[in-house]
Length: 236
Image (cartoon, rainbow, N blue to C red):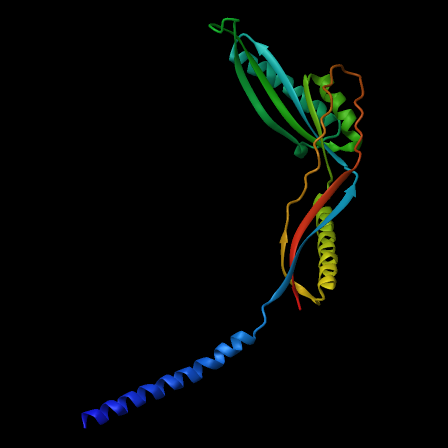
């Protein structure tokens, strides 16, 4: 009797194992039949060439006096004259920024005694290319003894960058089409698009304005705004 029970139990276990195998096997067959996904990934680039219409400068006023208070007061008065001259040259107050105020002690050759103080004030100004030369002349005549710039830019650079992005996507699509054709595949829609970095135009520095009355020529030249994207396409 005990032996018969063991035989029945073993048979039941075998039937259960067979049922599980029957359920699992179709899944395995389906997985084996599934083809691996094909994709094509390319990097596209686009660019727009334009003529800058804005110029930024930094004007510095440096003064010296025996005391810190006197140096700062003297420098503040000189900086105010430069700011007034810049405004009179047609620059709006919103385009004028005090970028730095500094005060340093001056020592003797041995470095043991303070013999005076040096104060400086730097003013950042943005203007149009048309007014750039006049602006530099006005600042120098008003007392600016340091001039750096211009940094050239476009007032609509965001719109131009978006145009370059559209060109980059079109370039990526052309590359992907060529690769798909060469590989005997059919290109489908874009699966992912990743924006690359935007190139910055070079910064150009003008010479220091050493004398008043000498017009400083500012030539805008051209700038290239570039964009890049990495696109992954489905392919079959």
